[in-house]
Image (cartoon, rainbow, N blue to C red; front, top):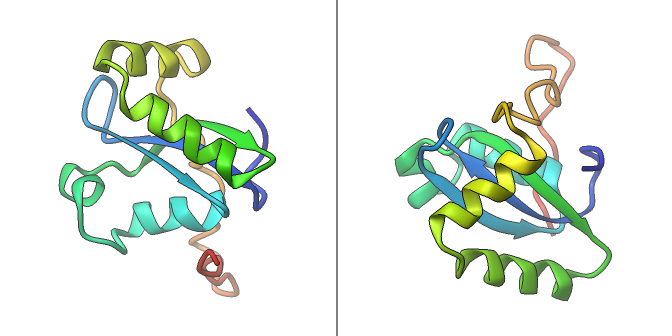
Length: 113
């Protein structure tokens, strides 16, 4: 699945196993996941508590990520759940250890461009 370094990605956030999901794309996955975890923006993901990164796919080009995001958003719910289950059967938060929030010298990632 890749690492959490800054890169273009299509991703799925979830509130829990088989619960609410949010499909998105970003040019900075590290910063975008932090925004979801902290509720930086109002909307579906915040209302439903989608704070777990359960799936992501890196892309070389933004247009590829947008195309994939739109395709997945058009899928039936079962197809989205199967996509997550195939890559992450435990529905683990793939970003659980990305942010050292207990480190007093740590600062949040920069905003995406």
